[in-house]
Amino acid sequence: MNELRFDTKALHGKPKKKDVHNSIRYPVYAGVAFDYKTAQQMEDAFNHRKPSHTYSRITNPTVELFEQTLCLLENGFAGIALSSGMAAITNTLLALLTGKDNVIASKYLFGNTLSLLKETLKGFGVEARFVDVNDQSALESAIDENTRMIFCETITNPQMRVSDFSIVSKIAKRHDLIVVVDSSVTTPFLFDAKKHGANIVVHSTTKYISGGATSVGGAIIDLGNYDWTNNRALKKYHDLEAFAFIARLRKEVYRNFGSCMSPQAACLQTLGLETLSLRIKKSCNNAIKIAQFLENSSKIKKVNYPGLTSSEYYDLSIEQFNGLAGGIISFELAGRKEAFKFIDVLNLIRRATNINDNKSLIIHPASTIFADFSLEEKEDMEVTQGLIRLSVGIEDPRDLMEDIDRALISLT
Ligand SMILES: *Cc1c(COP(=O)(O)O)cnc(C)c1O
Image (tube, rainbow, N blue to C red; front, top):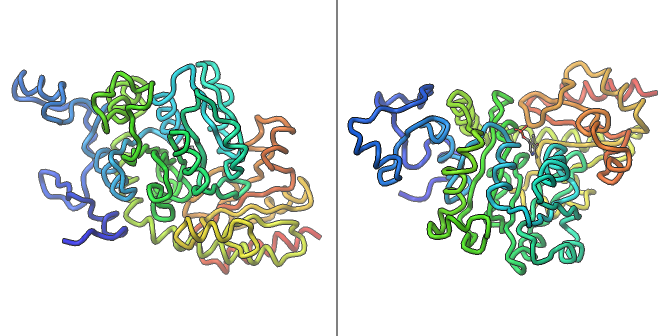
C-alpha cells in the first residue's frame, strides 16, 4: 500500500491498533496496573526484553495510541504524551541539559515557558539567552561551548512573529545544537518540523489538537535526526543510540516527574487528531477574512497576522505553513482603555485565555497572561497596552465580523 496521506493517518494510524473486542473507537483503558502470568514474564517486561504495559504512569494503551498517531503525523521516531504542554517543555529541557549548559531561546515565547527559562531553570544552573532567532548574527554571538540547543516557537503570540527555520536550522547545524520547536499553534498539519530542520517538536495539545479545548495535554516528538551521542546529559544512555533521548525520558525524567497524560485525556486528544485538518482549515480561513476586515478599520493602528500580504512574514508563512497562517490574530487599538472597551462590548467572542479552541476567544495580554512581567519586559516583548489577541474559532465568519464590527463602532 502507498504511504497514507495526513487525514487518513490521523484517522487510522499505522499499524492499526486494535482492542480485544475490535471496538472501532479505541477504548479508555482507565486501569493502573497490568496482570502477568508468570514472574518470568514480569522480569522480561521490566527489563524491556518484551515491551508491554506495566503501570499507567509509564505507559498506557490509550495514551500509547495517541502518542503513536501524533508521532506518525510528525514523521517522528518516537513520541511521549504528557499532562500538559508545560510538562512537555520542562521534561525536554531537563532531559537534555545539565547544570552547566545554556540554551538559546527566542525572546518571544509563551509566558510560562519564558518564566520557566528565566526563573525556574536558573535555580538548577541552566542559563537561557534570549535573542531574536531570525537575527543570524545575534544567534551566532549568543552561542558558546556550553550551548546545547535553540528553542523557539513556530508563530509567536501575541506578536505573531514567524521563526525562520532556514536560519535556525543552519546555525544549529553549524554548532551541533539541538533544535527544539514548540509547534502548538501550527501542529503537524501546518508545519513539517522535520523538513524544516527541527530535531524535537513539543506541543501543547491543549490547543488545536485537543479537538476544541476538551482537555489539557502535551507531547514530545523525537524526529530521529540528531546524534544523541553528542549530548552530555544523555551520557548514561549513549549505548542506546537513537533511543537515548526517549529512553532517558521514559526510564527516568518523565517517569520520575510523574507527568503522564491520563487515558481519559488521551481518548479526547486522539478524537481531536481525527478532525484536526478540518478544524484548522476553517479557523485559518476565518482568520484571514477577519484580519483583512480589521486591517480596513481606521480605529485599528496595526494588525499582526502572517497571512496578510502586508505582513513582513507573508512569504515565510506561505513557505513554512502549508499556505495557511494559523488561527491567531493580534491587533493594536489606541490604548488600554479602548482595548478594554472593545473586549467588553463583544457578545459572541468569549473573554478567555485559551487559543485554538473551536470557539473564538479574546484577551488583553498585557493585563492578564503577561501580568507577572514588568513594564520594561512587556515593552521588550512588544506586549503593549493597546494590544488585543484574538483566537479565531470555526464559527460562521459573518457572525464573528458582525460582533467585531459592533465593538469597533462602540469606539467612537
Ligand atoms: C498553551 C501553550 C503552552 C503551554 O501548554 P499547556 O498545555 O497550557 O501547559 C506552551 N506553548 C505554547 C505556544 C502554548 O500556546
